[in-house]
Every structure is written in structure tokens, then in C-alpha cells.
Image 1 (cartoon, rainbow, N blue to C red):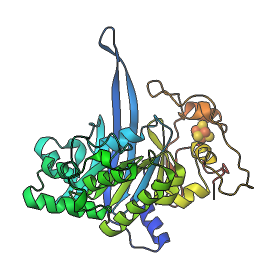
Image 2 (image 1 turned 180 degrees about the vertical axis):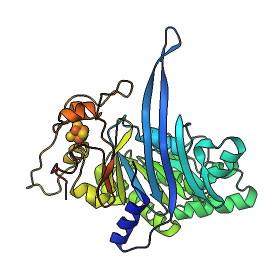
Image 3 (image 1 turned 90 degrees about the vertical axis):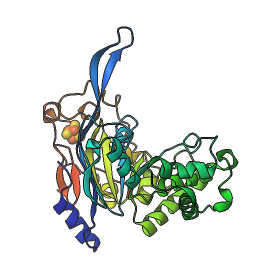
Length: 352
Ligand code: SF4
């Protein structure tokens, strides 16, 4: 199940704001990959990287996707921007001309819609072509999506650079002349130049020095406030998520196991996997001791998932029902959903 419209409305009422406009809806989004034998070049099995994900994102909102590596968050983000094709499911985006299902678009239709969204990658060093000047790199989406050319394109490039704290004097330089933080700013300028509504950020600060991370996160916040951007923010660092996100979706083995407003999730998680992730966060006060929950075993194998709750082999609260019955994600508190048979009765520890 999903966080429903009524859940979102209650949540916004709690925040004392008007219901926000919905921008993105994922419905049953699934990605499967064939497993092939290299020797015989035949399909030997199927791996489900993302399973039946339902999520929503409002205009101007930041939704963080968290989970261990291999949990499916980057695959999900790449499907949203159609860097890879979903196996099934819908990616519904509200555009100037109404709702479109990105998963169903092809060719010119998909290219026309691409100006509405963009993806920023983790590594500012490899995400820029070292042979392209800043001007060429930032202009590329305008050319690729047939948005503008000539002087109009140049004006849009300069505007995008100024929005991220750079200027026209940087146009003719090459990426190697910039620091990691500046290169990430160039990456943001590339993502902004077509005036998108949605940006998928894949760990955009994890390759940067801690001192630069805060500047980049503040830049993301400022851009969101001034341009009304929506972020799908993929991260493994929960401190970053705490700083930036309004809601958090926790992924395990390709599925969303918990979805909640940030404070609700950090204060009182409802899924044992989330509790374990939070227990690994650094404690700001040196005198405070918090139990670190070390998960036993390996993350679930997406090619051979456990029966029942896929988390049960690693869960210290598992009971018999967990081994046989798949828990459905359901609302436990306003706007807070979790897929755990015992979500209502467990008193899990948060960090606040
Ligand atoms: Fe743990 Fe059972 Fe909840 Fe799964 S359903 S997270 S195994 S308590």
C-alpha cells in the first residue's frame, strides 16, 4: 500500500500548511534483470532489484530514499528519470500539459518531457566530461532536449551558473580547474538549465569533504525555496537526510518498508530495519550511549528472497508469522506507514 492522499492531507494539516500539489506518483514500479550464464549465454534466473514500489512526491518537497547498498534506491531513481526502463509499473509526472506516465513514453515524446526532470550523480569528478568546457557541459541538456540554441542558450547557461554561485567568467574553463564542490555546482547548473520541476539526487554530497557538504546542502535548500523544486534524494548518510528531507522512505531488498515524515521516523521508527539503520548514526553528545544494533547475516538476495517478511532472517523481533506471511505496508500513525506484522506493538528506538 502507499501513503494515501488522505494521509498526506492530514500530515500537511498538522504542519499548518495548505495541501501541496502532487508532482510525482510511482505505482507498482518494478525492475527485474535477467541473470545469464556467461559460459552458455542463456538466461538462468531473474533478479528483482525493485519490487512494486508505490510512492508520491509533492511540489517543493524533498523525499529521501535510504537503505543499504543494493536495496534498490539508485535503480528506483534511474527508473524515475528513465535512465533505465521499468519492467512494469507507472511513473506519473505532472507537467505543464497534464499528467504523463514516463514509463510509457518513447522517442520524441520522451525527449520533449525530459526537460521536466534531471538526475544529479554522486561523483562530481566522473559526471563531467573533462573535454567539455563549463559552457558546453551546462548547455548540453538544452541542445539534447531541443530547448534552446544560440544566444538564448548562452543566456540560460549563465543564469543557471549564477543560480549555483558561479558566473559567466567560468564559461570557458574545463572541469579540472575546479574543486569537488565547484564541480558539483556545475552539475547542479546542468540540472537546472532546462527549468525542471523534479531533480533526482543520487548521493550528491557523499564524495565531498565534510566542510563542503554543508555548503552544497544549503545550496540545494536555497534552490528549492527559490525555484519550488522537488527532490528525490537518495542517501545512505542519515545525518544528511535529517538536514534536508521532509519525508523519508526506507528501502530493503527492493521495496519500501517504511515511509514517514522525517521527525516521526527519527523519533519513533516502526520497522526494525529502520531502527537498526538509525542506531548506526553518530551520537552528537559524547556522554550519551546508544545501543548499536548489528544486523546478523547478509542483506536479502534479490534473486532468492526469503519467504514471509524478507527481513525476517536478520530481524531480532521475528516470530512465526514473519516467516510465512508477507507484511503489507499500512498506516501506523498519521502519514507514517510500515510493513511489519508487529509495527503497532514494538517500542523501537529512534534518535531524537
Ligand atoms: Fe521483523 Fe517480523 Fe516485522 Fe519483519 S514482520 S520486520 S521479521 S518483526
